[in-house]
Amino acid sequence: MIKELAIVGASGHGKVIADIAEQLGFIVNFYDDAYPSKTHIEHWPIHGTCADLIALNNTKTTLSNDVVVAIGNNEIRQQKIQLLQQNSFNLITLIHPTAVISQYSKIAPGTVIFAGAIINAFANVGAGCIINTAAVVEHDCSIDDFSHICPNVALAGGVSVGAKSWVGIGSQVKQLITIGDNCLIGAGSTVVKNIPDNVTAFGSPAVVIKNH
Image (tube, rainbow, N blue to C red; front, side, top):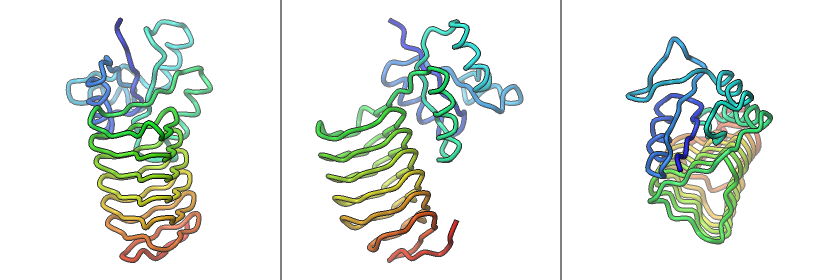
């Protein structure tokens, strides 16, 4: 049986997600709001905008209503996911074959887990998250909806990351730390104290440098 997957968002991030999807046996169809000024991403054609995809689904002319949103911006990814859910799309989870996922972890729909990532026992990952290449989410961590854990991030046991937060590439977070909602942790930071909501923090140790 042919498995078709719509990917909303034709960017570098979308390329990697398409690669994961194809390794899992999907035929991918890209949709991007830059269409028709943008018609291809590498060898993949872009078939229309997100609105075009919704229109196709409403007329039942697609082979599948499975979809994943390949947009790195947390806010925009949330908006697109919620719009697609309102229009009865099936938001799927993609997990790269080389990722290591504990049988005791929980991963909500719409999350994509990249190559070499590790999700350990009793970690919970929310909806629409990105767990990027070689990121480590240790036991009992909690990642709230629409957050992005960037490549080579290490979250020690019991870390909590709030909704729509971004933990930058190569950062390390000490055990039992809480990072609030809508936070940005700068690349290469070491987080050893709790971070409140709606701030940018950076450094080793990380300190708040800006309120949102």
